[in-house]
Image 1 (cartoon, rainbow, N blue to C red):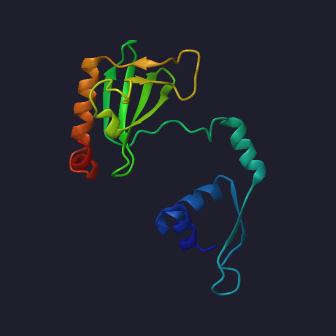
Image 2: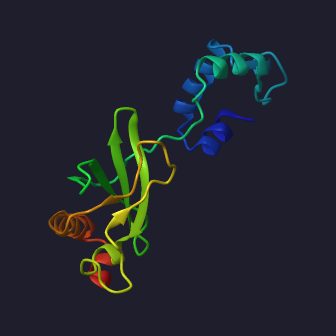
Image 3: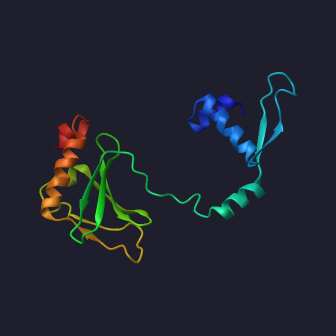
Length: 174
C-alpha cells in the first residue's frame, strides 16, 4: 500500500499520513516488512502491526477504544429541573438535524440522547410532541431522567433556532 493509498484510506494528507506511519513505527506498533528503497523500483513499503505491542498498549490504556462523546457543533448550556448541568449540541445534516443532550459530570459528559430539531421547535409539551425530558443512553447509578423547565425550554428553542439559521431546515421547519 502506498503512502497516497494510506492517506486516502485514513482521510489525511500524504504528509500527515507519513508522519503517523513514522510515529507508529518509532513506537514499535508498526513494522516495516519490505522497503521500497531496497527493493524493486516502484515497489511500495509493506507494513505489519505488531500484535504483542498493541496488546501491551491496550493493557496500559484499557479505555483506548471506548467512545466518549465528542462535541463538535454549536452548544448551549443550561440547568435541568433536577439541578444538573446540561449541554445541548446541534448535530446532523441539513434536513435531518438533531439536538443532542449531555449531562456534565466529574468523569466527563454522559450521553442523554437526542431529539429531532423540528420536534424541539414545537410548542412546549404539544400533544404528540417532545415531553421536554431527556433520558440517559447508558444508565449509571447517578444518571436519571432530566426534565427541562418551561423557561429553560424556551431558551433552548431560541438557541436551536438561532444555531440553525441559514441552514436548509430553518426555512422549512422554523
